[in-house]
Image (cartoon, rainbow, N blue to C red; front, side, top):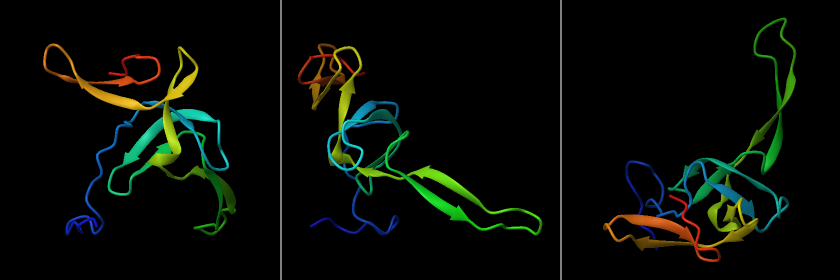
Length: 118
């Protein structure tokens, strides 16, 4: 069971292998098979916000007099387990492994192709 973090009001931050700017492919859900770029990671919720994926419509009332209402589409976060990092070169989704390079720094690479991400 995860401990409650007093400052955030939720469970502890989860170590995520997906980062902002990565290209990911959705592996389950209504948008299965679609690819997009990660706009934001939410490590306290273990979720990622992906461009063009999991869009929902919201009806917005007019806030001022004379303004008209509108319908907005907005991306909502997906659970991190529903996406995999996507290789644009090989056109394949893969798990990520973290390894220590010869110079002692940690790097990320795709398990299927061996392609370096960082």
